Image 1: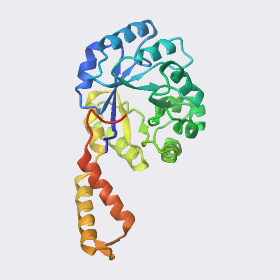
Image 2 (image 1 turned 180 degrees about the vertical axis):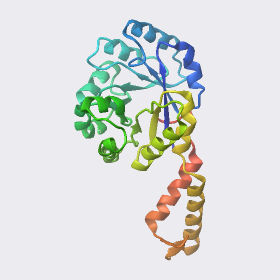
Image 3 (image 1 turned 90 degrees about the horizontal axis):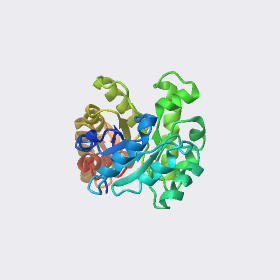
Image 4 (image 1 turned 45 degrees about the horizontal axis):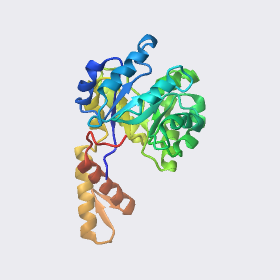
Length: 276
């Protein structure tokens, strides 16, 4: 099974000097950002930098500017470059936005839609079911701004849970959670990442290389979980279908499947070949 990406690292599109460092950082996926990280006067130069660096041997995701901006068409054209494995589309609000990308790239386009507005959330199920979509990405900061929400904890619980649900119903990979702006607070980053995983998210956006290690770590099973899973699987093999107890608790088929999933996840790992 192809590993699924857990960590997504943004790098500014106008900083070609950082591209190689980002690619060597250990992130599962590097996102070259043409949107928020690049000021308007440098948009054109950023595309030129990407085109000069892009290489099939270094697959990356390109976050373009939104469909309503003056840079959209040129950004999408840049996505034709070898090495651009997927398009991250900001403020995706409808399937019509996805079609705008496909009109320029063809139906083989792979898109990571950012759900960042109330309209995008309202249409998330339809967006998730679209043929071009790899997985949903939660733009939590812009989402808070659009809805006038203050806080990233229980204030966004409903919205995060819904994105997990619609992703599962659509049969796509679990969604990617938004960024953590506290670059030097590893404890907070771990807490936020573990919360995302508990809710059913499968990855997280990163804005600095130092965030990659904690994010990757938090999306892997802990040593305690692995040991528990080994005991469950071993006990199930010995029982040959009979009821068993592990650590004083009865074990049935759903628990056995959970344990098997933990062992597969621990053994699989994630690398640069991870699917977006």
